[in-house]
Length: 445
Image (cartoon, rainbow, N blue to C red; front, side):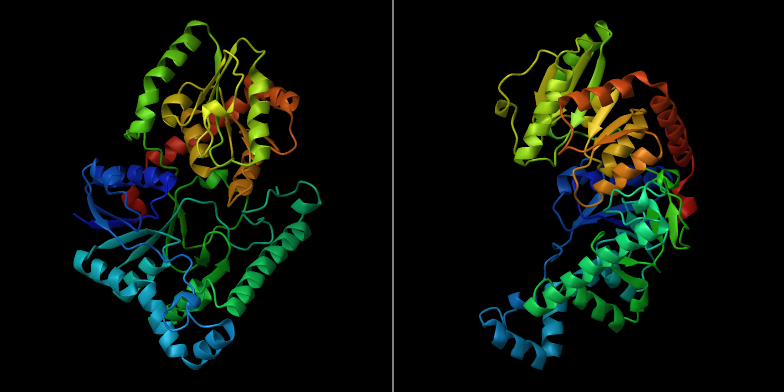
């Protein structure tokens, strides 16, 4: 039996996806040990997996926080830093916990490490110990290609000037400009120096840094040498030239996950809403916009409520998340139901339309349940790029949360509910997704 160590950042989306991956590996006869820098022991051990707690990733390591310079003025810190480069590097290696990661991996001694691509400290520790490594990516590909827009933009190839090769190259130029500007600002301020420590450590263990491409998403670097497993569908990407080190193993939706107790309390109320919806032959619209918290976002949520309130055959379940509460909204129509949070899979399974912010995990869950989407990008991280791909593949419509009013939102929902093409294309993508599920994970390892 092959022993696989599975390591993720511990964020909710990747945790759920990785638990599906772990369940498939286990069903194929692998032994899986789960490791994480965030404490998610309870979420993992409930499924019977061995769990090891890692120290937290020092994402914002700064030379200014090292003991030698943290109480010095910037000028004195400069002097000390550049006259004690070796000591500063050793302090960085210690504060990034390389020795601890190495000790844990050496003791565990897995035959394969499957690790999320942003956890470079764990990746390099394994490489140093000669443990085979496969990178795990929950995101679409974000390597530089002249026909592939940066993932943080909403550019769609061949649409408008921005979608031309020249427009895409300009977008990449500004993407790199932001990266370089941030690098130099950090150097001047002696702050957020994790990138430089990682790069030097890679050199020290014999890993060629020409394979580390600087990015602002995913975090710090893209590793173009180490084999990578994408938790996405190749067919959902824009057309591009797939790198040799990249394999697509398909989206992972863990239907058997145990929802948190705070969501379990709402399950019965949701069941009653769904039963009544079925009895009256209504259409359920599920809106989840948990990353939206600004004043403009509250206005947008109110516009969504306004868009559905006069449609007696529509039912809206709206998951607020974040810091918003149902009590923040005073007048709620009878066909609108607000929740702090919901068991998302339970609701999506009965939905005719999903309004979401372009998060990749929600997109994959919509494909799992064949639910067309109305996407309003949260405009963070990769949400713009995910939203652009939904529009490109015709799996729904997109809007702008800062521009669309209640009338335009109503028009888009109505079009999704009454245009068969969206459901047809979503069904096609669902069949592709199921095709990935029919292939053993072992074939990628």
